[in-house]
Image (cartoon, rainbow over all chains, first blue to last red):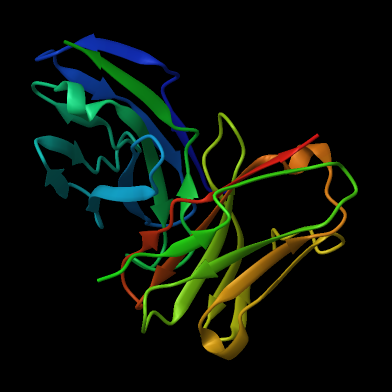
Amino acid sequence: GDSVTQMEGPVTLSEEAFLTINCTYTATGYPSLFWYVQYPGEGLQLLLKATKADDKGSNKGFEATYRKETTSFHLEKGSVQVSDSAVYFCALNYGGSQGNLIFGKGTKLSVKP
Amino acid sequence: EAGVAQSPRYKIIEKRQSVAFWCNPISGHATLYWYQQILGQGPKLLIQFQNNGVVDDSQLPKDRFSAERLKGVDSTLKIQPAKLEDSAVYLCASSPGVGYTFGSGTRLTVV
C-alpha cells in the first residue's frame, strides 16, 4: 500500500542554520504531496504542497520539490528561526486537496537561539 | 472565520470505560474527517463523512469505535469499551471540498 517515510527526529539546530527533512514515498499512482506543521498545542497546518512531478511548493521560506524519479519530497529552509520549532509531517493523497491523507511519522524540530 | 472546534481537550479514562469526542466543523464544510494520532506516529484516518454519509470507514475498528454526523454538521466519535492502545490524540478536520482545516485535537489517555 501507499506509505510515507520521514527521517527520524528529533532534529536540533541553531538559529540561522540550514534545514533539510527527508521524505520519501511509496505510491501506486501519482499522488499529491504535502508538508504539514504542528506547533505545540495546536492543530495541523498546511505548510506547502505539490500536485505533480517537478512542482515546487514554497511557503514562509520553506521549499520542497516533487521528485518522481527518486520518489522524494524533501523539506528545506535556508535559515531557521526559533519560531520554526515544531513537528513536521510529510503526507500524500490522491485527489489534490481532498480525500484521505497518508502521513509519515513526523519529525520534531527544535531550533536553539 | 472560526476554526474546527473539538472537545474535550483532554480525557483520562480507565480501560473498558466508554468515551465520546465532539467536533464542530467550519460552517459550510461538507467533508469531515476523524484521524487517530498515536504518540510518535503520524495521523491515521478513522472515518470520512461527506455531509452526513460515510465515505470511508475502512480503518475504523467497528467492534469498539462508532461515529456519526447528524444533519451533516457536528460529529461525535465514541469508543466503547476503551483499550490501553486507544491512547492517542483524536483529530477532527473539515473541508469545503478542497483543502483541510484541522482542529486542535482531543488527547485521550486510557489507564
